[in-house]
Image 1 (tube, rainbow, N blue to C red):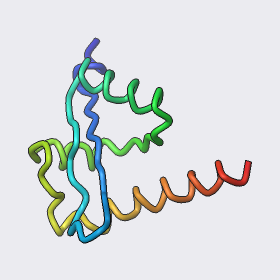
Image 2: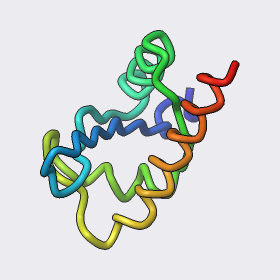
Image 3: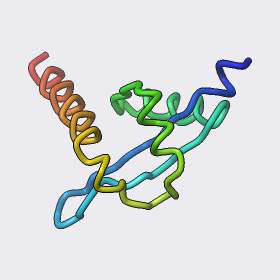
Amino acid sequence: MKDRELRKAIALKYEGNGASAPKVTAKGQGLIADEILLRAREAGVPVKEDPSLAALLQSLEIQQEIPEDLYAVVAEIFAYIYRLDKLKEKN
């Protein structure tokens, strides 16, 4: 149960089209984090686990853009997801 209480999940969305940065669209800990992860997987949304980044993003509000100092780290996550999507297209 302790692991579940410590688990954090943050959902990010980047719309492009003039948006300056990705935004937090959902966040939670424990059972809420489990539900976010379950819904993401059910919807076919790739999940990348990074507990240290999740801890940093946890302080942001829903619909808040990520701060500039996290752009590079979050860009790596989006690049990872892009590569996964390209692999799925090939298969």
